[in-house]
Amino acid sequence: LAYTGAIKAPTDMELRDNIYICFAPICHCMVHPLEDNCFPDTIGDVTNIDGWRQLTDNIHYWWYGCNYYMTLFYQPQINWIYQNVKYLASMGIKGSFYENEEHTFGFIDLTSYIHSELVWNPDMTYEEYIEMTKQFCIDYYDSEAVFDLLMLCEDVKSDDCQRCVSYSSDGIK
Image 1: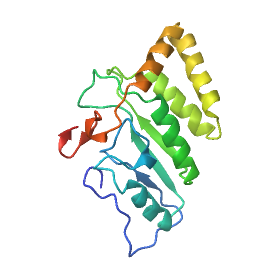
Image 2: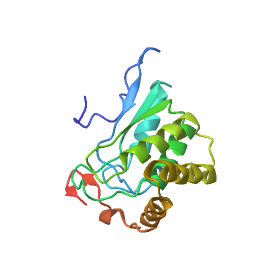
Image 3: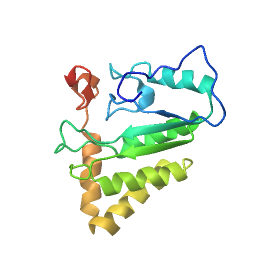
Image 4: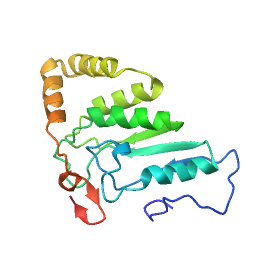
């Protein structure tokens, strides 16, 4: 049912215990946290997740951590990953898959690493998470300046989801 808009949980069925749901919204804000529920195409995703939670505890979340429509544009994701993984863990989501694009300006190695570490330890504090991110930049990119640049990008984002660089059913917003 991928890419068909089948995101709402059915109301007239029961799921077996060995069935896992992979919740994978293709249209979402890549700047604001999921719980803000602010992007026009994702308003209701939290409600939809709750609908699936009524049917099963076996839910995983599939992240699209890159913008396939503007691949050379860096998406500020460090805070976004932290806020969303923490939120989903608080909802009882059992796991997540983070899809990124290797030929984008998305720092795939960094974002994949910090996502994986946070999924393994969702109780990590924000301070520990930022320190881990900084250490990765020093170890992998051999530069604390990369971390400083990325954190600067984190602070430069829109308060209005209509200006977020994300894919929606109406095209790029």
